Length: 122
Image 1: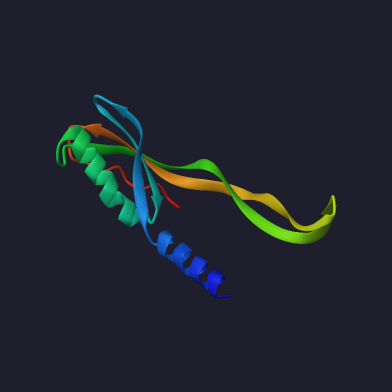
Image 2: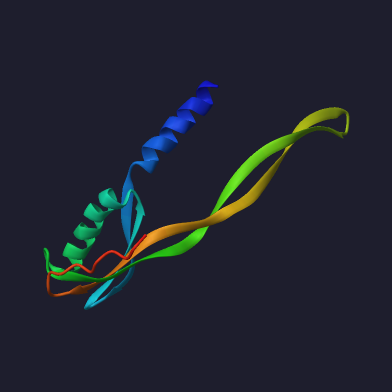
């Protein structure tokens, strides 16, 4: 029980954070993906865009949500005994089931200018 509580708390703490990663880069701008908490990740995204274009010298020209993979639930349910030679071994069967797409927020930016495109409706 204690182990499950610790795992749950670590997962909650990780969910509260966010990160930004460069998806595409060019001499005139690029695309940044925000993961986790969008407000927190936006700070990292600004740092990345500042590094590419100069501090505050960029425009966010497009924002959208895009699938970036699938999430999976793992269950371990069947316990069976397997005899190999003179020993008996316990085995668990594990099943992974796709539960849906993982979505990430992306922003396209261009160097030069200081405007921000409106967020699309949610």
